[in-house]
Length: 309
Picture (tube, rainbow, N blue to C red):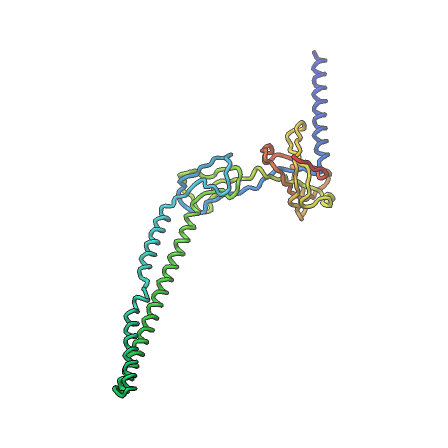
């Protein structure tokens, strides 16, 4: 019996050493290791008020710009109606210039005919110069009167127009505020965290939920200085997600960012040269349409190979 226990412990130790050797071998073969991340967007309230509706839960997929909730808009809607009523009232103040000066124009036409008739009479020696002068003066008076009317009414209408424009701008501002009462995700992705619920009162700037695009993720890996000479933006590489030694599915990756500053090696990251203290961060875009790679999962990258998924 004692011999069997000794044999069992020996086999277990052999398997453990073999597993560790395989893991270390896998890590040593990789050009760099890192953690999978995604672009996360914190969606916050753009307006204050009671949340009337928020139709999403953690883990839900949301489409870009699709409305998922509303913040109370009653007071804004009432104020908008009040402004529209004011615009209508102001509109009635606008003067119909042509109609208002029509009588004066008719008087001018009549005075001009009288002036022409008096000149004809003077020419025929049937009238006097005084009659001509009086008729001419009457035309001048009426013309000045018309100019004064036009100036007054034009100024009044300009004031009405300015008042209307001011009200129109206020309506546009309210429309913008009403639009901001709509809650929508700016990107297509998955809800990671929900911070608010329907019925709660929120304020502008308060976080409502966090969403991330899990189909297009990236591996943040770290390389040593000598490796930088072999990297370039747009370079195609092979990425492996750490799902166990038996499952090393390759994913096509593309280098999209290379840090220009060195940093101390993160404690959770293993480099090819464990003595290296300074490393450079790189981002490698990975297509995760199948959803197999999870955020926070460790991964490795081979810069010398490229594959198609």
